[in-house]
Amino acid sequence: MSSGTNPDLAKIEQMFLGEHDRTLDDKGRLILPAPFRDALGNRGAVITRGLDRCVVLFPSDHFLQWRDKIEHLPLTSGQGRALKRHFYSGAAVANTDGQGRVSIPPFLREYAGLSGAVVVSGCSTYIEIWDAKQWSEQRARFEESGDDVAAWDALGI
Image 1 (cartoon, rainbow, N blue to C red):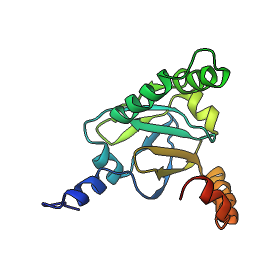
Image 2: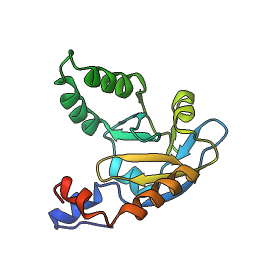
Image 3: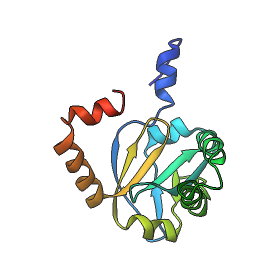
């Protein structure tokens, strides 16, 4: 896809969109979908624990935006300290190799139950990597509750 002179289309091309079935190899490497590699470009990335038992890959610039928010959490907040531990202790620099693969460290694979079949999900500014069965269950839960208008209202949507 080429954005030509349309600035909105150029912004969309930098987003992570879609759901892609993939397989982890024996060394814990994952081939990122081509559109995700394109959107990531040369920004670099950080991989860490997600909040829903998945692995999250952030472009470096987006990871730094999260860091800026998390750093302002008070040290006196137990929830703030827990979030910092969860977010940072599970983080590692994620480099793609010449074949578009990213290595997922063993502790992250264990955390998210990743082996074999996985789903790589675009979440606009970041990527989630799920065990295929857990992804299916997560989607089913959402689809069952997707018509809960009160929940959408609470989010301001």
